[in-house]
Image 1 (cartoon, one colour):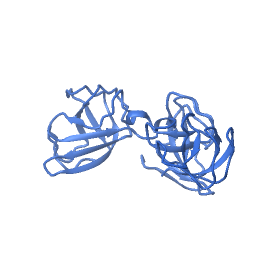
Image 2: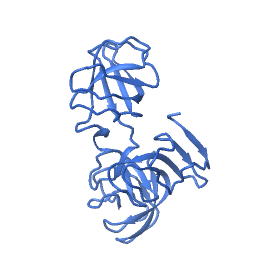
Image 3: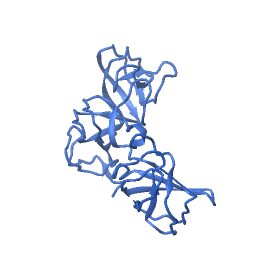
Length: 251
């Protein structure tokens, strides 16, 4: 159920303009409303959000202190296993950070890489394996050796934050339709018409847009190659410090 699709014109039990202190749907679950807009379920990070905010995924792929670009296989593991011995490469990682995230395992002898969804992740010790096993939803078809590699990333919808101005520090996800308390659950709109607050200069119609250069979570027209990631395109011209409508394209 971790890839749940609620359906076209679905009515999820947590509405798109509601927040929840408890999780109501799987992270990343999505549905399309009757107007063709798409929404994905997410957990807010440590800061409050407001309606109209552009949001991004967590910094450092959600990791503690340092991104886990390549971690360490702790012991030889036979093909067909769902529990994989892993140690952190850079810094110790607290338990649960990568739950519902992703792991890519590289078999160096065959130069093949396999992606798997992470079910649970224990605390990972820095550079030393101490009986710590990633539990996967699907087994790996290969035997792993301590010379093989694994890269890990958290679920992009876990610990979302306001889009960082000028240079995103995580993937652009879309926008929020209601105020959201820190650590609460909400829906992120990823496709379709979306209302925004224009803050970093006027908005030009028909242009791609990114997060602004100085204000977190607000759009700026893309009139030249700016820092960050394009979230979609503008549907109207708008004045600074006013309301605007854009079309999100964050899938």
